[in-house]
Amino acid sequence: MDVRNWISEHRFVSFVLVTYAFTWTFHAALFRLDMPQSWTFSTLVGIGAYGPVVGAAVVVWASGGDLRGWVMQAFRWRVSPVWWAVALLLPAGIIVGATGVFVLLGGDLVVTGLETLVAYPFLLLYVLVIGGGQEELGWRGFAQPHLQERYGAFTAALGVGLVWAGWHAPLFILPGATQGGFDAALYVGGILAESVILAWLYNNTGGSVLLAGLFHAGNNVAMNWYPVNNVLFVDGIRDEWVASTGQLAAFVVLALVVVGIVAVYGTRRLSHHAIPTPPLEEPRTPATARERPSD
Image 1 (cartoon, one colour):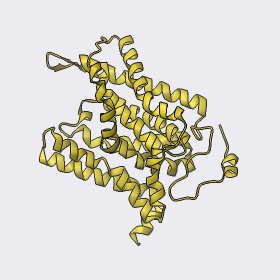
Image 2 (tube, helix red, strand yellow):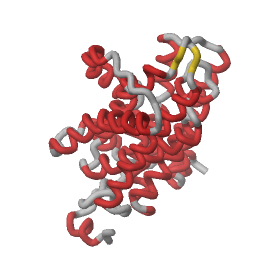
Image 3 (cartoon, rainbow, N blue to C red):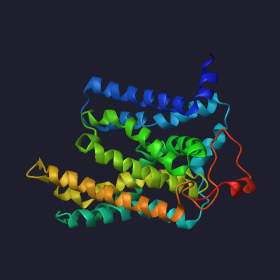
Image 4 (spheres, helix red, strand yellow):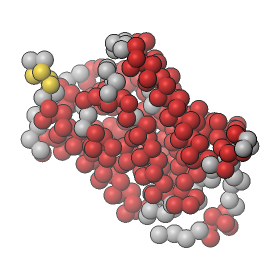
């Protein structure tokens, strides 16, 4: 069978296979080279993180989709200021909330390094392009609309989240990767919750990958100012209770945000409006969109 035909007939599976193959090739090379943490290491991991973008591009191209339309989702900036505020401020709110939960669970509150917040906008732009935000052209720009047409937005978000979490698996054994110090179960739970939040943001902005990417990047960058980091090491020794409790606190806040989203918007669309269509289909008319069942 012609490869393009096979990809066109198995779009989501093809997306996952290409995404994993591209990224895991870089991970395997880094593991084989046993490269220490460095700018070179981070750059190679960053390039490998374009797997979801490559996977989606291959499927859209092979299926005869609108590549330009798919890419332009990353430049969709004309959305309500409310959603800009959500994308830019919610990551900080999650950190503040997680800090509160951490203290309630018995952790010490030590706040330092606030003067370095001046670097936040620059780190945000960097991570948007190479440190996580770029993934959203694949996860939300392709996978989410592809799955939610059939399964609904909430279930689709969980499915994308599972693929997203599995895609990160090699980083748990790759020396120098941040994920090596995380509790795997809490990490997966956090990604599932974040996937729902990102689907909610994507669906309510008419398919703005830009805002989804900004939230994704903001979530990654804001963790640098999580006060738990200030008490994580004592005399150079990592405190595992602090690590696990800090991770649990962050998961609790993410889960509460998801509960609030579902309570207000329902599970079918995670939105009160028509949801974005896959980059391989024609957009639904407003009349068609109104005919879809709501929660």
